[in-house]
Length: 281
Image (tube, rainbow, N blue to C red; front, side):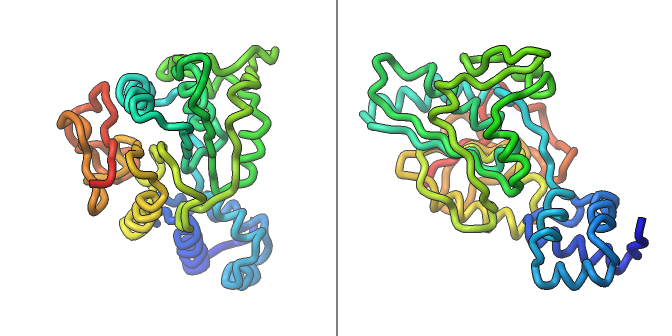
């Protein structure tokens, strides 16, 4: 393995932080070192990084990414969709629901949202459903589009709340065609402008790894992406307070008490309710 001294490694970590929004503290130096070692000599890789050479950008982004996800993670959020969000949608007489899984990794969350909406809307279905899953890494998106998953994507903490897959043999499952038909995937960096307007946005367990400046930037983008009357759900540790001009309606348990630092938590365990659900004030 080529030797990457502390100075070169520090420079590469800075580039990775700039491109992804990750806090430097959330980036593992060894992961960056391993990724860089496969790209060439240290001076050469630094020069390529400075001019945003795509293979270098992709390798470093992949090195710092966190792909932890599974079906129906945080089931209380999906129960909230059933008991609060969808009744409001039906009462308002909307013709369609556009949902966004922002930072979808390999697609389990996006498919879970689609399955939940399809299963709970009354039949015959008069409300259209479209779900977009976006991620920074094309490798993740390829896995999402394939729609086949193993046991790691199906865990006891994420009970199968709605019909979503069928047996694909050898302990694997394949996403049901009905769910797949309303779900699409695209490459997108949360630091960039949003890819549209949405009635429902899931951005969970993503911002916990971001720097404070990147969190504020992404929050502004998400705010612009949310349609009037829409809802945005975060993970319990993503934000410490609502973005400016937003509110967190509902019981006090909807407000976050967690720390932004990855792997740390202060305060009581999360209640069986979305910790943060924000709407424009």
